[in-house]
Amino acid sequence: MSRGLRRNERGAAAVETAVCMLVIIPVFMYALFLDDLLRHVLDAQETALSTVWDYTVQNYGKKPEKPPSDDEDSTGSEPFNGFFGAQSFARRMFCDHESGLDSFGPGRGPECQDDQSHHQELSAHACWLNPGAQQVICTLNGPDKSGNGSGGPAGAYGVELHQSFMDKFGKGGVIRCSARLGVQNYLLPKTFLQSFSKVEMARETQSRSTSGGIHANATGGNVVDDPKGLAGNVYLLPWERLAIVTDTWALSQEANSEPGSSDGSGDEYGIYDRVAHVYKDGGNQGYTQMTQSAEAFVSDATSEVLASGIQLSSLDPGDNPAEPSLSIKPFPQGGGPTQDIQQNGGSSATYFNSEWKDWEKDNNQKTHDARGKYYLGCKNAEQC
Image (cartoon, rainbow, N blue to C red; front, side, top):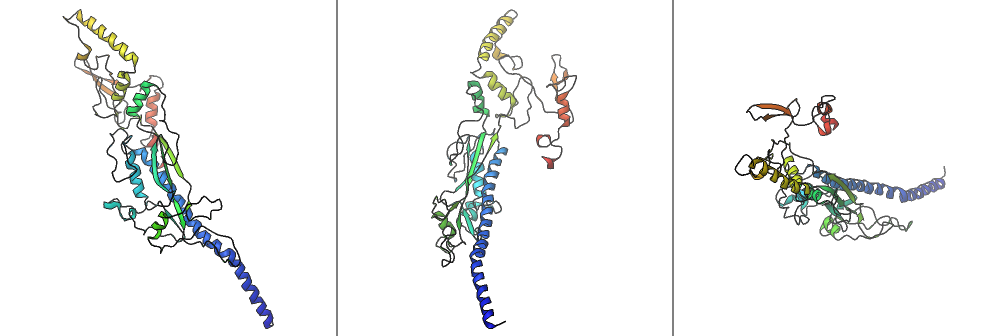
């Protein structure tokens, strides 16, 4: 092979390599950028998803406590206990964009201050400090800060008696949580090999060595609504919005009430308190009419025997038609809903205090016997 021919082949290979670099290098760098971007999308999803599910385990019957004073979004009165606290702790957990490193000690831990050690990505850095980004925020029934939600309580019928029950016992509803991350580019050049191509590749490249580092770059970020995705220096990820409906009418404590008396819980959990609220509510016209008739009936009936008639207020709850009288007991281990009731003669008798037996099919008993002890009656915890 002649020297001239070899020189021509080397020249052709050099040209081929240069042309290939126009494709290979940007594709390689874009792959690194997209890998970081995908993980940041998952971080934002985890933030919103885990926060909204935290509301399934809140104590809705407990009186609200004072919201955290060090959280700017925890202002005003809480609609239920833990409403602001759940999101406040979520923001502390995900202040470094992921749930792996957490410290809730004095000062919230370094990852929630101006510490930047959690920024370890090669190509794309996410930060809540970018303009347009938002740490997780949750709202009850109404719209959140991003405009998500139409407002209005869930399940409201506009009936006075129904609404008064909701106001006292229905502390939940539709809970919406939203979050959004902003990402800046730290690897992709805005242009590449301008001698061969005039096409811009990415938004402005940031530098970690600038004064204030990544957090300063995020705070001073520039968001531009550019269809080509090249103007400005912040990529805003899609909003992560999730919602759940919490049914706080369901009892969260085991009902245990004797005939004619409250369960003695002293809070708003008990079935007695709920029945009494509906039965004696001022919006229940039937109660007012019944009370007047019952008062006259008892007074007339007892005045024939006694010198003066007995007033309803002097009767025990079990004998007073103006007071609710109900009985419910927890199921004994391995049995049905039985309860011992004291009789007039001093002896006691055992009764079923529900429709446990219908003497033909016993569907309630069969349902109870067939249920497991885990969520929704699962037999095995792993299957729930």
